[in-house]
Image (tube, rainbow, N blue to C red; front, side, top):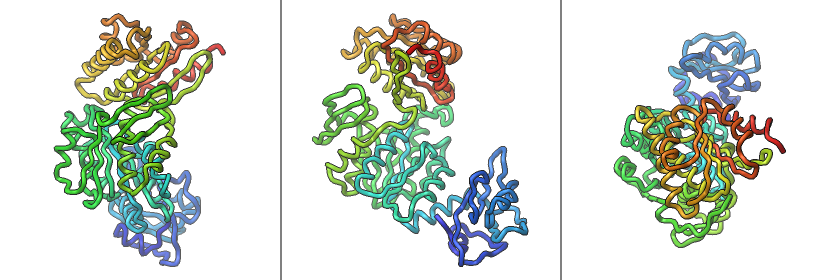
Length: 453
């Protein structure tokens, strides 16, 4: 997206220190490494960096001008704009574009499943509309600005993913994106260490309705905490739950189910994926799509990298779901894997950001998995091998060991991977689940380098 000088002043109240006039329009760049000739450099600041220190570098690479909070004017700049806060200016520029082109805007947040749900909503809406979405998981303030400013002028639907580190952040993202529809996938225990309680987590997610269009809709997981903290929103509320679904068939890489008496299919397994799809279904219908369009959109969905990513390595089938992990997602994905796959080997790592109760929550995950295997006909009697990496993940193994399962704990990824190569039979399917900080891709790399073909 490009701005002329008048639009920059209108969008963020910038003071013009050096004018280029309204005859030119230019893009905005925050990165001197990728800045293009003629763009305006907007220097962001962080705890350990200050983009204003690189203004001359941006100009040397062909930038026409820059934003500043200090007020200095470089001779080779054609345009200089002073603002109090460059991040706020970036957000204001993004909101200006959102209002100028006015796409139907769908905002998505939740403790888990945000990115998966975003991809499902995108797959559905793309059947009918020109749709633009958040790239990968770029779901903070900067990512929001990049998403909005990166869309084309004729975009009909804009999908923005919203993450958070604490209270007030989802409200900020809502303020500058002004969504027409909001989706809350769930409110679980992810970020419990930061927010301190499940109530605070639900409260933080519910901030998405603060600037939600009153003529739009909130589409949210049927959760009593979410119902409580979104009670002030006066628009339409649609509540969804896996309890509203009748699963007709599940096998590796496929699900068929009934929702509101209509049949849908996904090219992925897992009840949690089915539940994520419900908000995409509801969004499609709110935007006037037909059943055939919605159904085709769901079939077009495919998981993105590190989300149930499957590959053959030597004699093993490896499923990598180690993009992120919290107690709810780990329970759901591990039990789905064990129910659907033969010769299962489960490799689990530490889950982060769970606060003072982290050890107990890891233990509870192991207890849940053990009970599910014993009580679920699809899993009962299977010989399941559990490998855990890290001290906290070792807590997952304790109740599994007590229930008679084979469990071995490792201090690092290399030792776990070596154990797989040396001891696991060919033909086994290996499932990887952990928080990103565990770097489980190291296990995959070791298997690629050392497994026998």
